[in-house]
Image (tube, rainbow, N blue to C red; front, top):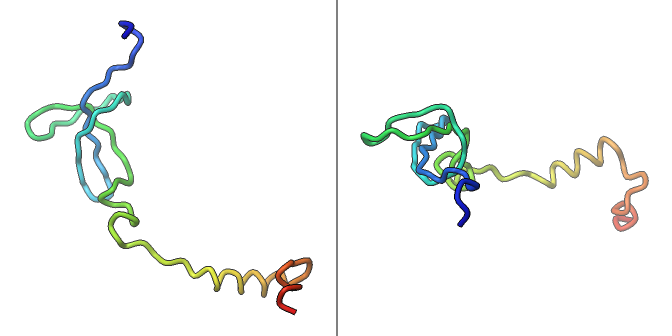
Length: 89
């Protein structure tokens, strides 16, 4: 590898601020903040969503009622110029 052209690849502390979850991984991300974790100081990156707080991974995601949305759209705009109106007749 060429020397001096690659970013600094180091351990970084990511902090999910939505549920106070912290984890360490390696990254080249630049940051000015530092924080102590398990007795060692790391560069700190604050994030809004991680696997600990994302609805898909936590199992708390909502099921979207797409049929209700379609009906609401049809009530608002009718069936003028709609291909589905031809199929429904």
